[in-house]
Amino acid sequence: MNTKEFIDQWLSAWTGNHPQKLLDFYTEEASYCDPANPVVLHGREQLEKYFTKLLRKNPNWVWTASEIIPTEKGCTLKWRAQIPVGEKLLEISGLDIVEFTNGKISRNEVYFDRTPWLQALNNP
Image (cartoon, rainbow, N blue to C red; front, side):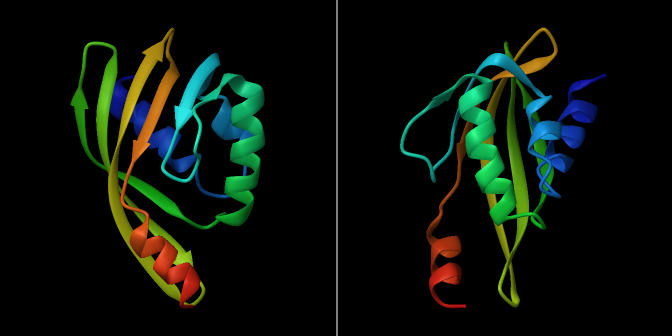
């Protein structure tokens, strides 16, 4: 599977509240961080707890790749997300640093401005 196919399948796994499906894309020792979580998560056990809670709260969001920039260990991914918040459909963009080990994600750092999302949550 090439990088674009992997990224497209991985991003689709973020929709639908299936944390185990999403976890299948990560190594056992993977690290993950995003702006909503104050600490870097390490290992599938920590990722599973976080993804279970996160996907349960956001089962209908949809993530799509805007641009995939290859790097030595993986890629930098520019993305767009559509996130239902009450009656609104919030559209945000951001980027991920994604590194692979043996065909799975070993490092995933997510970067985006949470301000519009938090404002939408606080003003439904």
